Image (cartoon, rainbow, N blue to C red; front, side, top):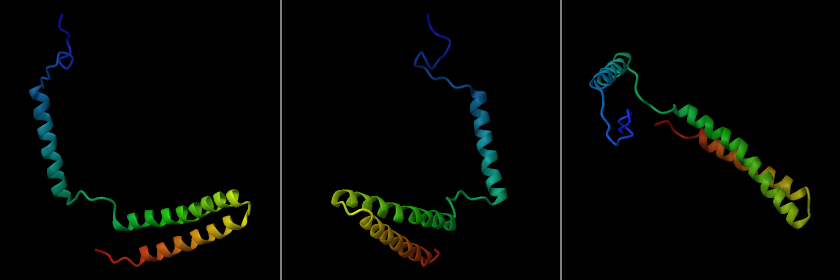
Length: 106
């Protein structure tokens, strides 16, 4: 006995009313985009730069601390390599932030 759901039978039949409604919805959305002057753009450049700066501020010191902790455990010199590596991570993060801030707008 055939099931009531056409998708289970392997046949996909679409309702013409739904197709018509979908086309009308697409037209209305396109007209609204034109009317409002809205363009599909990704995040603004400032937002992208802010995210990059935040990533640098977190990843630089955290990466330095992780590597320093690892080498301190390996060589038994705690906490000196950890402190030096974390300081170097901070320096590298600030250097990268300065580079990001000096980028020219498109």
